[in-house]
Image 1 (cartoon, rainbow, N blue to C red):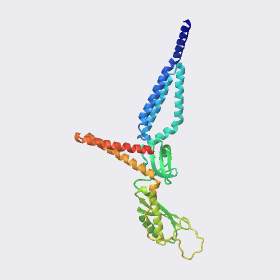
Image 2 (cartoon, rainbow, N blue to C red):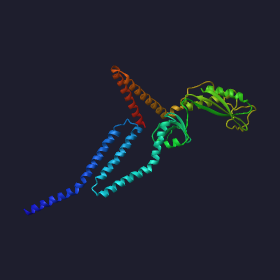
Image 3 (tube, rainbow, N blue to C red):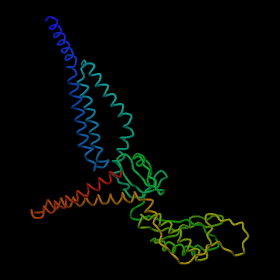
Image 4 (tube, rainbow, N blue to C red):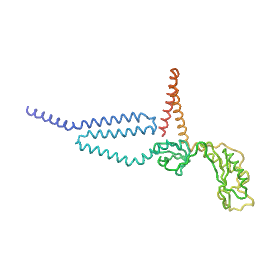
Length: 356
């Protein structure tokens, strides 16, 4: 009997010892479970479930999740079963680590973020515009908070940091029209007034408005001319340049004018009076494919979606104004129209986000 009592007392003492050892860790375990559970639930509700949000719309929520994660880490540190001085040291260490991360990353990230805000306020260009920066030219496909994506004439996608777009000169082709021009060199044996007449005809045949001719240089063996015209449909900029080159060739060759641009050298024996003019195969004109449809496909799609988004937002705003001024009979119909427009907007944003 004494042996059993001794064994029971020993087991009870062992249980008490284990409980005494684990008891200080109970607040820590509870804090870990609550913090992790809360962060997982908020991530699901704010980000994972909201798949239709764009990257710009997700950014504030992601920043909020980061702040909550830091707060959760501090809460866990406060429940550590250590002395108060050690606990304060752990919290101070967390603060130092966070400050170091911010110090190393804030220069670039915050700079790009502020530059993105500047681009949105000033709006020097929009999605779909032709721009040229740092020697690259193309159409804008996306304007993010940290970078701008450009689709070049070789169909490549290049991302430029917003700080670069703000600090570097950016050439923007105006949506109201662009000047398309061709430089060409011709001999001194033909009067410039004759050349000007044929070049103006070429610009008209290339479907350019308000054409004009400039004499841009007098070389040792040739005169440099520039024929320019206004293109109102800037989306066909590449096609317009090609049309103008072809029209200049046709206009000058049909007028029996020899082109000596950029330099002309012929070392083969030729009969006197022979001119290097290509003969036209006739008037068999065929429909040409537009290179812009292939080169700037993403930029064109992005521009159309941006315009559709602006149209839907304006439609929703107009419906809200009508709802405020309407009576009870038309209110239900207007609310239905608003719900339809909002559903279309959500689908458009979701599609854009998935493709992005």
